[in-house]
Image 1 (cartoon, rainbow, N blue to C red):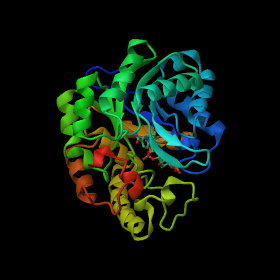
Image 2: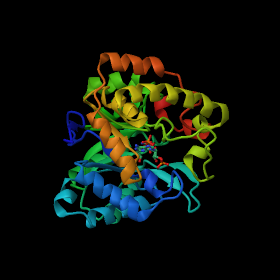
Image 3: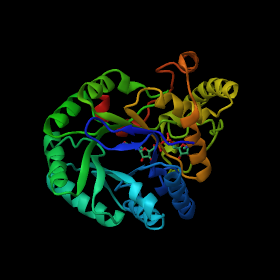
Image 4: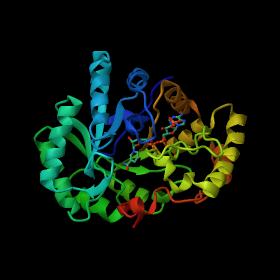
Length: 336
Ligand SMILES: NC(=O)c1ccc[n+]([C@@H]2O[C@H](COP(=O)([O-])OP(=O)(O)OC[C@H]3O[C@@H](n4cnc5c(N)ncnc54)[C@H](OP(=O)(O)O)[C@@H]3O)[C@@H](O)[C@H]2O)c1
């Protein structure tokens, strides 16, 4: 397998066409295995994945320290290729509770100082607020990151889950490399207004939730239960009738996947890859096995007939249930 590359917007870095999202290695999807997490990061780097995505609040530093360990124990050549995309801003307590977001300039610089230490690096490749702080103009948050860029602590500025107006205001303040947003066969919201705005401004997408948290991976069984601290225990799409409905979509995809001799997850990832050279899917693999499956999507070609079949099987808006619970939906500037 040859690793293809894509560029994060007109001003951002060249990255592997698939990025590795490390969030699930720090709790969000239940129990984790540290040794397997490190081995998965190493396997990704060996396969040519250069983009590693994290957030300072994923396990409140746990995820950054894990990446630090993986980079320290990786061969030097691979370590040097790694590009780190870091989100900041979420306010959380020791029990994992959420208190909102802080995008004020002093907080931005403080978050960055801690992240650099935890990651063990002298700069962050792409730094982004995880959500819009409703009390701080985006110009101030982005302006503070731009100061970090000037001083060499950050290379590029990214955004996350913000809408078209905020994207325009941010881009008028400083160059923006990419927007991170949920985008998948069953999460097509960005197509309405956000993607056209990004394309007009030369900003790329790093797409998360391309498997809708595993829901459209083909590995979720009807009636599957999740521990209370697992995101999926509270996600509307994984509840009762919604789950049953959504799994019928997966079975339609499975038929297409079987005909092509690939897996359901590979079809779902390949569909996102097919949406444009300006889109880089972040896969949330937590094990080498899942990573290997995800990387296989790079070799899946969906021609026009395949795409039509896939989109007929899973039409836009086919999913039952919102992508987040109501309290979290309310924090999404991208949904306004
Ligand atoms: N900006 C934001 O607001 C935001 C929000 C969420 C995530 N993110 C970033 O995006 C990354 C990916 O997002 P996500 O975790 O929601 O992604 P996802 O790839 O949609 O879901 C990941 C889950 O799918 C399951 N899965 C089944 N087959 C898989 C396969 N072949 N490859 C990978 N996963 C498979 C895994 O669960 P099991 O291991 O249980 O099977 C895994 O934990 C995160 O790690 C994080 O860095 C950003």
